[in-house]
Amino acid sequence: MRLYLEMSFFDQIDTANVPQHIAIIMDGNGRWAKSQGKERIFGHFNGVEAVRASVKAATKAGVKYLTLYAFSTENWNRPKEEVEALMNLLVHTIVQEIEELNKNEVRLHTIGDTQSLPASCQEELRRGMERTSGNTRLNLILALSYSARWELTEAIKKIISDQVKPQEVNDNLIHTYLTTKDYPDPELLIRTSGEKRISNFLLWQIAYAELHFTETLWPDFNEEDFYKAICDYQSRERRFGKTSEQLTSGDKLLTEKQ
Ligand code: IPE
Ligand code: IPE
Ligand code: MG
Image (cartoon, rainbow, N blue to C red; front, side, top):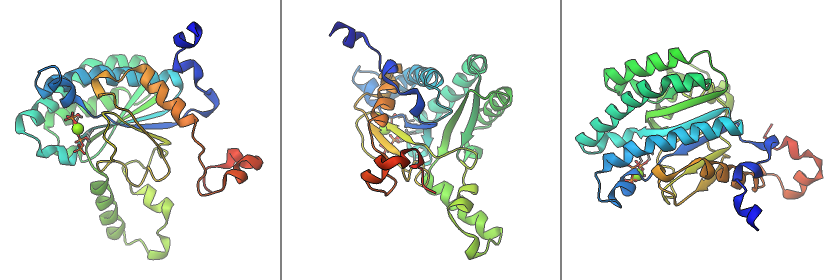
């Protein structure tokens, strides 16, 4: 019993079946702060530690892509002071963390309408991406001023302006017009804070993702929570439309469609 209690979820992970790509909706900073009688921004500041923990856990578990929903297009509608504080936090965090990321062979990317971010954010992001461009251990993708409907709208505009013929339009072509064209689809999507919704995140890409919801508020999310989500993922049977019997009759490894 004692042994069981001390065992980390990390030890329970099947290393042969770790998701290549995990996406996280980091939610609950405001409630975390409020529960301590503090301003919402205090929660955002403390959320940075959970980002560090997730990056560390992803590298340790052998995840290759980690996408973090940090700011949605809808979040621009929050009070001006909160938006400003979040943008400042973003700049400071990148400046502060980039060497550590580089040391851990993490490559930084962004998806979203980043041109709408303040110039200082754009500049630090550009620098961070350039500084880490040679790294291959983990791809850390920050979704900033991102929403799936924005992404799909942009893709459709581009497909039309490229005069793509209707018969050429298929899953693969659409994939190449998305901001995530260089990354595989996430196999696992995590949302913290007990909310069970997608909030305009990666609608196309999560078509077959496993969803893991936890009550934990984002600033409290730690390495163990990350490994626990992977274990939950590994307990699922991914059928991709097939029957369970088909999977157990030998083609279990061919579960990816096509
Ligand atoms: C997530 O926490 C961070 C962002 C959306 C930027 P929230 O700020 O949404 O926290 P809650 O949901 O209000 O508790
Ligand atoms: C989703 O969280 C966006 C991010 C985590 C960046 P929100 O807190 O904005 O989502 P809703 O509005 O409650 O659905
Ligand atoms: Mg929220």
